[in-house]
Length: 239
Length: 225
Image (cartoon, rainbow over all chains, first blue to last red):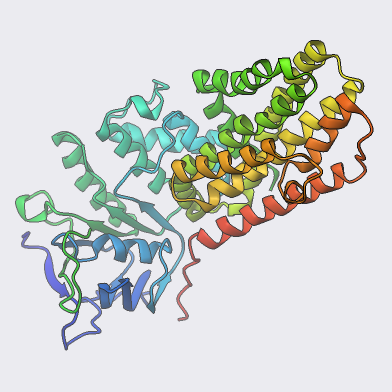
């Protein structure tokens, strides 16, 4: 674990929660993303039990934990994609969300996707493609080609996925293992970019499995939040 | 608003155009039904016309289901689910009416009906109703298999029933069936055909809109402080 990262634990079914995981104070006020006492269950299976998380502007938080600890579920709740059973989530500004599985149209190209997202983000087609090319270019994506997404490698699809999350003026980035399929260079570049994004004032949350194996995050991640499978439910194998 | 409808429509068109084989099969399917039943005289027009719903509604179901995971992100980015749905409706209706036009010409030439314009109107109504029907089914079911089974069930039952039977009147393509029947046989009351098809189409579209709205991401609140 990087020396710069401070570890906190968000587990479920323990007596000390609700817990806001070591929020860093910010001069301008409260957190950009705050999830308070969030609970979620699927049938009898408790996925999140009274979990809280706060992320401030310019802060990067890595969420780690075993399969089934509810990392992806927490991220999707923070994005608004899933409604929690109880608890409260608030976001200052707009969320950029990068899901674990690239949600892309197989028969459309990267440029088609950028053009499709443009009206939603209040951008012109030209602005979206220009901004998207700049983002994709930073990850060595061949922007000159107009390849349909079904013909892209897994890593290249993930780069499009990530670029779509970054498009527009997001204030908080929620990235669910965004580097899957990346080659080593792109993976290194990803963490350098996290440092840049936080430097620009964005709040960044990264769900990751690789944190412990890697020294790249040294000085990049502000805080590590470790999640555990709730003791009150059988969540084996759930991600 | 207009751009937020037209751009999804444009991308749906692009996606559809890149499915060359599927497009060919979509066009060939009702033609096969029609040609297979030409020996039964005027019934071939009804069979061919109604079976066009397999093609158009099938395309709509597939478009709706493949878009579902991306739609969540698009809605999160700022689209309203209704805008995405409306864009696809407009594009698929254009596609459906184009197929209907071509198919009408084939059937008018092949069968020589008493009322060629009513034949074209009946085929057009099939296309009109098929799109919201497919979008509603695509919004409702979890996978393609369930969607295709519903499609086969509804269209298949409509094909086996006479338009005078009570159950036929409750199915989405009854109005089109009446027009097609009258175009070849005459003597069929068609006054309710158009209102019934329009009402069914509007109801199906709003059912689809309701389902996608229910599935859309919940807006995350801004901080109170």
